[in-house]
Length: 294
Image (cartoon, rainbow, N blue to C red):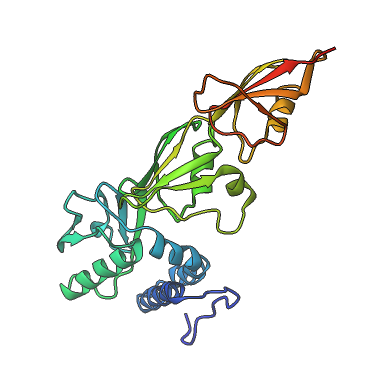
């Protein structure tokens, strides 16, 4: 391989400190590979690492290693240092010769840099090329519960928003509320998000999740309709729903019923009051459509 600058792609829109750090690390790996005469590996690292730099930058900010995560450490050309292990409860891993290395709180990039530093400081290797990959994401997760297709623990293997997690859980199930509640691990006030706004992608409607967050989808808030409608029964209460919308959902008024003769029971009251189609409904309302007078 002739001396001189190694040509690399220049059309990557790499912005921000983390992207620049990823590029700088890629170039250090390329230089080490070139010094060791690994020409082919140098070219692969140059193109592969730069192509992945935006993703690495996101991972650098989005996922910190923690206890129970499974990782693989590869030291190119020195198989005796390769390790496939699970991070211990104290946040450490054990590497051949250099011993215990703190992994918890680091990213794959910063952990690889720390292992590189320790190998060089101990005079075990000169200019080692170290790569760390995550096998299983176990330490950082979000709980999702309630009326979703597949409730459970979902790992935060990258930056996720609420919509992303609902989709991973198979979306909301039949009979679910129109809202999803986000509870933070720090005990701050829960946030209610309208699923329709999440699906439509309204500005500011979605929120980036953090480890320990809980998403809960409750049963639908309901109203009741009885009397002269085609499909009396229990119906989900939609945001800002009015009586005329409920009657339409229930198949409309029967031939013997009157849309102008509607009774409403609210808040468990025994007495029925008159209402019209423009009355906004509340949770638990009972709407009764009466017969018309011939």
